[in-house]
Length: 204
Image 1 (cartoon, rainbow, N blue to C red):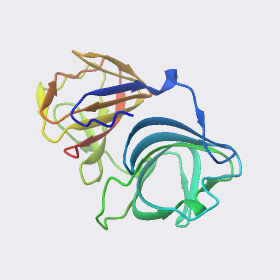
Image 2 (cartoon, rainbow, N blue to C red):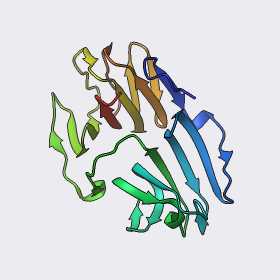
Image 3 (cartoon, one colour):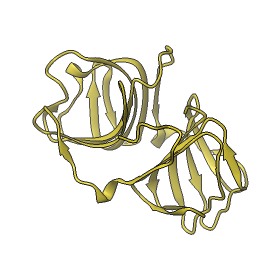
Image 4 (cartoon, one colour):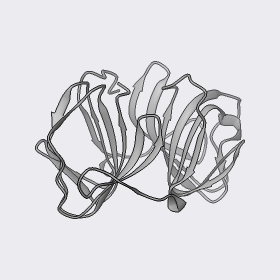
Protein backbone atom coordinates (compact mmCIF):
# COMPACT_ATOMS: atom_id res chain seq x y z
CA UNK A 1 0.00 0.00 0.00
CA UNK A 2 1.42 3.38 -1.05
CA UNK A 3 4.69 1.54 -1.66
CA UNK A 4 5.86 3.77 -4.51
CA UNK A 5 7.81 6.60 -2.90
CA UNK A 6 7.98 8.37 -6.27
CA UNK A 7 4.23 9.04 -6.21
CA UNK A 8 2.23 11.41 -4.04
CA UNK A 9 0.08 9.76 -1.36
CA UNK A 10 -2.80 11.28 0.59
CA UNK A 11 -5.08 9.77 3.24
CA UNK A 12 -7.59 11.49 5.50
CA UNK A 13 -7.22 9.12 8.43
CA UNK A 14 -10.56 10.26 9.88
CA UNK A 15 -12.39 8.84 6.86
CA UNK A 16 -10.98 5.29 6.92
CA UNK A 17 -11.99 2.46 9.25
CA UNK A 18 -9.85 0.77 11.87
CA UNK A 19 -8.63 -2.69 10.88
CA UNK A 20 -8.31 -5.44 13.46
CA UNK A 21 -4.80 -6.75 14.01
CA UNK A 22 -3.81 -10.23 15.13
CA UNK A 23 -3.84 -8.96 18.71
CA UNK A 24 -7.10 -8.39 20.57
CA UNK A 25 -7.60 -4.76 21.51
CA UNK A 26 -5.11 -3.35 18.97
CA UNK A 27 -6.39 -1.69 15.77
CA UNK A 28 -4.58 -0.18 12.80
CA UNK A 29 -5.02 2.34 10.02
CA UNK A 30 -2.35 1.42 7.48
CA UNK A 31 -0.94 4.39 5.55
CA UNK A 32 2.04 2.88 3.75
CA UNK A 33 3.84 -0.46 3.59
CA UNK A 34 6.88 -1.48 1.54
CA UNK A 35 8.76 -4.63 2.52
CA UNK A 36 9.49 -4.22 6.28
CA UNK A 37 8.85 -0.46 6.25
CA UNK A 38 5.43 0.52 7.54
CA UNK A 39 3.67 3.76 8.42
CA UNK A 40 0.40 3.51 10.33
CA UNK A 41 -1.80 4.81 13.09
CA UNK A 42 -2.34 2.32 15.91
CA UNK A 43 -5.07 2.35 18.55
CA UNK A 44 -4.69 0.40 21.79
CA UNK A 45 -7.67 -0.36 23.98
CA UNK A 46 -7.18 -0.58 27.75
CA UNK A 47 -4.75 -3.28 28.91
CA UNK A 48 -3.82 -4.33 25.36
CA UNK A 49 -0.41 -5.67 24.31
CA UNK A 50 0.90 -5.25 20.76
CA UNK A 51 2.46 -8.68 20.32
CA UNK A 52 2.73 -11.74 22.57
CA UNK A 53 5.97 -12.71 20.83
CA UNK A 54 9.23 -10.79 20.67
CA UNK A 55 9.60 -8.76 17.48
CA UNK A 56 12.30 -6.11 17.14
CA UNK A 57 11.87 -2.99 14.99
CA UNK A 58 13.41 0.42 14.71
CA UNK A 59 10.56 2.81 15.42
CA UNK A 60 9.57 6.45 15.18
CA UNK A 61 6.46 7.27 17.20
CA UNK A 62 4.33 10.28 18.03
CA UNK A 63 1.78 9.68 20.79
CA UNK A 64 -1.49 11.28 19.67
CA UNK A 65 -3.70 10.32 22.64
CA UNK A 66 -3.38 8.47 25.92
CA UNK A 67 -0.27 6.81 27.36
CA UNK A 68 2.00 4.43 25.43
CA UNK A 69 4.29 1.95 27.20
CA UNK A 70 7.29 -0.14 26.16
CA UNK A 71 10.46 -1.53 27.74
CA UNK A 72 11.79 2.01 28.17
CA UNK A 73 8.88 3.46 30.15
CA UNK A 74 5.54 5.20 29.80
CA UNK A 75 4.99 8.04 27.36
CA UNK A 76 2.00 10.37 27.37
CA UNK A 77 0.25 12.26 24.61
CA UNK A 78 2.61 14.63 22.80
CA UNK A 79 5.71 12.45 23.22
CA UNK A 80 8.02 11.82 20.27
CA UNK A 81 10.15 8.65 20.32
CA UNK A 82 12.87 7.49 17.95
CA UNK A 83 14.28 4.11 18.98
CA UNK A 84 16.82 1.98 17.07
CA UNK A 85 15.33 -1.13 18.72
CA UNK A 86 11.95 -1.74 20.33
CA UNK A 87 10.52 -5.12 21.31
CA UNK A 88 6.80 -5.44 20.47
CA UNK A 89 6.36 -7.94 23.31
CA UNK A 90 6.77 -5.01 25.76
CA UNK A 91 4.54 -2.56 23.86
CA UNK A 92 1.22 -1.98 25.60
CA UNK A 93 -1.21 0.59 26.98
CA UNK A 94 -2.86 0.27 30.36
CA UNK A 95 -5.43 3.01 29.80
CA UNK A 96 -5.54 3.07 25.99
CA UNK A 97 -3.72 5.23 23.47
CA UNK A 98 -3.42 6.21 19.81
CA UNK A 99 -0.04 6.63 18.10
CA UNK A 100 1.43 7.55 14.74
CA UNK A 101 4.15 4.96 14.04
CA UNK A 102 6.86 4.37 11.44
CA UNK A 103 8.87 1.14 11.67
CA UNK A 104 12.10 -0.02 10.03
CA UNK A 105 12.86 3.19 8.14
CA UNK A 106 16.31 3.71 9.66
CA UNK A 107 19.32 1.70 10.84
CA UNK A 108 21.38 4.25 12.80
CA UNK A 109 21.69 4.40 16.58
CA UNK A 110 20.16 7.82 17.29
CA UNK A 111 17.70 7.54 20.19
CA UNK A 112 15.31 10.39 20.98
CA UNK A 113 12.65 10.95 23.64
CA UNK A 114 10.99 14.38 23.61
CA UNK A 115 7.92 15.53 25.51
CA UNK A 116 6.71 18.22 23.13
CA UNK A 117 4.40 19.61 25.82
CA UNK A 118 7.50 20.74 27.75
CA UNK A 119 9.68 21.80 24.80
CA UNK A 120 9.98 25.36 23.57
CA UNK A 121 9.17 26.44 20.03
CA UNK A 122 11.89 28.13 17.97
CA UNK A 123 11.42 30.93 15.46
CA UNK A 124 11.12 29.73 11.87
CA UNK A 125 10.59 31.38 8.51
CA UNK A 126 8.12 34.29 8.72
CA UNK A 127 5.69 33.64 11.56
CA UNK A 128 6.30 29.90 11.63
CA UNK A 129 7.47 28.25 14.83
CA UNK A 130 9.51 25.05 14.71
CA UNK A 131 10.24 22.30 17.24
CA UNK A 132 13.09 20.07 15.98
CA UNK A 133 12.61 16.43 17.01
CA UNK A 134 15.34 14.42 15.27
CA UNK A 135 17.05 13.97 11.93
CA UNK A 136 14.79 15.55 9.28
CA UNK A 137 11.80 15.55 11.66
CA UNK A 138 10.02 18.44 13.40
CA UNK A 139 6.77 19.93 14.54
CA UNK A 140 5.82 23.16 12.76
CA UNK A 141 3.26 25.63 14.09
CA UNK A 142 1.61 27.90 11.54
CA UNK A 143 0.10 31.17 12.74
CA UNK A 144 -3.37 32.08 11.49
CA UNK A 145 -3.19 33.34 7.89
CA UNK A 146 0.47 32.35 7.43
CA UNK A 147 1.77 31.65 3.91
CA UNK A 148 5.07 29.92 3.15
CA UNK A 149 7.26 30.49 0.12
CA UNK A 150 6.77 28.18 -2.91
CA UNK A 151 9.37 25.44 -2.58
CA UNK A 152 10.52 21.99 -3.75
CA UNK A 153 11.10 18.96 -1.55
CA UNK A 154 14.59 17.57 -1.99
CA UNK A 155 14.25 13.96 -0.85
CA UNK A 156 10.50 14.31 -0.38
CA UNK A 157 8.24 15.43 2.45
CA UNK A 158 5.79 13.67 4.75
CA UNK A 159 3.18 15.49 6.85
CA UNK A 160 0.63 14.50 9.48
CA UNK A 161 -1.75 17.33 10.36
CA UNK A 162 -2.07 17.35 14.15
CA UNK A 163 -4.43 20.32 14.49
CA UNK A 164 -6.05 22.94 12.28
CA UNK A 165 -6.11 22.71 8.48
CA UNK A 166 -3.15 22.68 6.11
CA UNK A 167 -3.72 24.01 2.57
CA UNK A 168 -1.84 24.22 -0.71
CA UNK A 169 -2.72 24.53 -4.39
CA UNK A 170 -3.33 20.78 -4.53
CA UNK A 171 -5.97 20.59 -1.79
CA UNK A 172 -7.16 21.20 1.76
CA UNK A 173 -6.03 18.87 4.53
CA UNK A 174 -7.86 18.88 7.89
CA UNK A 175 -6.60 17.47 11.17
CA UNK A 176 -5.75 13.79 10.69
CA UNK A 177 -4.60 14.14 7.09
CA UNK A 178 -1.43 12.31 6.05
CA UNK A 179 0.38 13.58 2.96
CA UNK A 180 3.55 12.17 1.40
CA UNK A 181 5.14 14.10 -1.46
CA UNK A 182 7.99 12.64 -3.54
CA UNK A 183 11.48 13.92 -4.29
CA UNK A 184 11.45 17.30 -6.09
CA UNK A 185 7.70 17.78 -5.68
CA UNK A 186 6.71 21.38 -5.06
CA UNK A 187 3.86 23.41 -3.57
CA UNK A 188 2.83 26.76 -2.08
CA UNK A 189 1.37 25.98 1.38
CA UNK A 190 -0.66 28.24 3.63
CA UNK A 191 -3.21 28.14 6.46
CA UNK A 192 -6.30 30.12 7.42
CA UNK A 193 -6.27 29.06 11.09
CA UNK A 194 -3.50 28.15 13.51
CA UNK A 195 -2.25 24.73 12.41
CA UNK A 196 0.35 22.29 13.75
CA UNK A 197 1.93 19.63 11.56
CA UNK A 198 4.35 16.76 12.15
CA UNK A 199 6.76 16.87 9.22
CA UNK A 200 9.65 14.79 7.84
CA UNK A 201 11.77 15.94 4.92
CA UNK A 202 14.56 14.49 2.78
CA UNK A 203 13.97 10.85 3.76
CA UNK A 204 12.40 9.41 0.60
